[in-house]
Image (cartoon, rainbow, N blue to C red):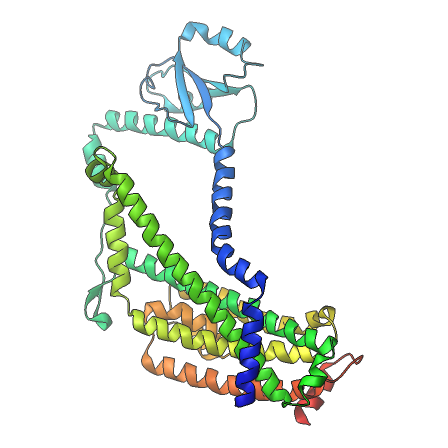
Amino acid sequence: MNNIFLITKREFLTQVKKKSFIILTLLAPLMIIAFGAVVGLMFKANESHNIIEVVDKSGLFKNQLKSDDKLNYVFVDNADEKSKINNLKGNESLNGILILPELKSQNFDDLENNTRLIINSKIGFDTKQRIVSDITNVVKKEKIKQLGIAETQLINLDKGFALKTINVSENNKEDSDLTFGVKTGLSMVLMYVTFMFIIIYGVRVMRSVLEEKNNRVVEIIISSVKPFELMMGKILGVTMVALTQFIIWIAMSVIGALVLNTGFSSIQKNIPGGNEEIMNKLDIAQIATQVSHSLLELNFPLIICVFIIYFLLGYIFYSSIYAAIGSAVDNETETQQFTLFAILPLMLGMYGSFSLMNNPDGPLGFWLSMIPFTSPVAMIARIPFGVPIWQLVLSILLLLGTTAFMIFVAGKIYRVGILMYGNKATVKELWKWIRG
């Protein structure tokens, strides 16, 4: 145990002291935010402001087609129709002319067949659909008037039915759509974090083993320690690196959220009517309160404990596989034929977990969270929705037992493979190492 501790300490300090670790740890969250901002700016930069002149021969659409910052309707006289069309080509300040014919005998089919949009260049699909939607809404209102139905009556007919759901298994708590959305969002975040950290740091273990093997440093190291101790020290050392980075990112996220929230509040207080008019219009306070209330209703101590347990066991389980792969090959090119076996089960668990959102207690969710190859991501995806204690205990015991077995198998492969050079390991040869 003392040797494992020393190797763990050495591996941890070696990784943490690297400039790449410090830079990545501090800049990664900022880079993600910057990337999101750049993508948002790209979409914003590609937005177009379209000006459409409207020839409304029926007068039905006057003051009914509403303009905004993306689409501006300009109504023109009917007599100017031909001249406007003739001058449209090459007119960079105008995107098109909408010709709305006269509505005769309330024949809306004839109106639709003779309505034309003449453009001088390509317009976006969204812009065209927006124009169609605006015209449809005006026609719909006119048809409602003909039927003698008041708009308030139509709104009442279209009003949805709000169904309150009471969950007796959760002390008769109301299970709202917002609560489900919060659980789904939390489930996906925890699942992706676990998946990405296992992949990233599992590969790091494999590369560390492969690097020491190629540098022949391992020959000197194993003269003082057992191969199994060296392998476990590496796995635990990188585990500590992953947890350190994860804790730093969580702290940065919490501090960033508090700073942004304080900054937003101070800016809002300096805006005239900011506390009432803006908040009432956007319902930001109400949404934030509902989300916070939904989060507080969750069993966070249990969720955090389950997340840590599955994160650590899942990481050690897959890191053992990666360490065995790194010891069995001579270069990174050869790792490709083996790493697929480690990645596929994780991907199966992650993508299979998407179906758990609508039925977390279904048979697929149960088996994915029981099978050790998929349970590190599947159970974490289920835990925000609530999981029976017996399933949690059974799943953890299965994962713990399988992890111990995988460490044993990886140790067998590591013991032989770490000193093998120039020999391309095959599945048959690996089986001999395990049995030996």
